[in-house]
Image (cartoon, rainbow, N blue to C red; front, top):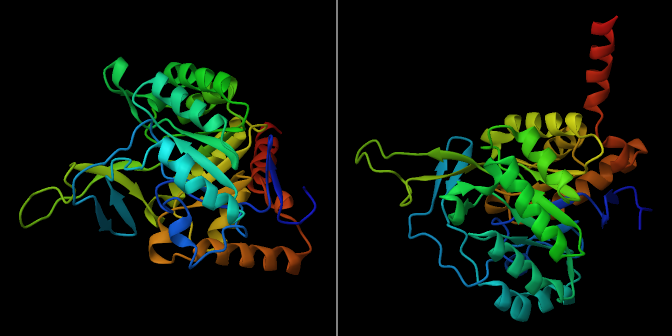
Length: 316
């Protein structure tokens, strides 16, 4: 498929372009058909799918922050069976490249959801949300322990033949080690980063603005940290394909993440402000490549050339 200047290959996963939408910010894609041609964007990551329908947290679940947003939706979703029966057929009709995001409370939950998806047509890849508490391990997040990450990814790898993406948490003590554990255990692609744990308090009432108390911080506020983390993981694991996430809303953001080493990106919080942003970014990236006679593949990792030159100078 790699013929178009926008086409990208991430291990076994081929995409028509590098613009995807992030899980939890784009519904099941069907809610955005008035604004975006789903067949035009590189792909969409579904809301996190669980074994059974999940109601999520009680409101208030979202609040704005300076240059960002806090959310504690609580992974509300229709459940994997309803997704396969009611949502996925329509996505296939629309020509969408669908990446199914999956979560669970135990390793067995993840495996069971992935197995339920395995026989369904129209799924390009599986993305694991490992920023979830492992109830069998006292609530420790799967993504906060390289050993827990490795154990989960290994089990899921055996359950699916599809390309496997693992979504890393920036709250892990050592993101590079978490990335290494996921890759060595069978992940084909790494997506990073998920949201940062944050909190907002009403100064008058002194009550947290979210019913859950804390929430996930996203949006432009986290972009510089996300770019740094993508750069670090790309430098430590140069052969592992990466998808960059964090505060992306315009072409310059896309180019920045590509330069840091991401082969594709996911648009998240910006979808709430401009539901057509992903389609617009495809058009702008296409115009950018055409005007410069370049390809997306040529844009990936450019910033590392300067790092290599600096290191060579230091050694000399």
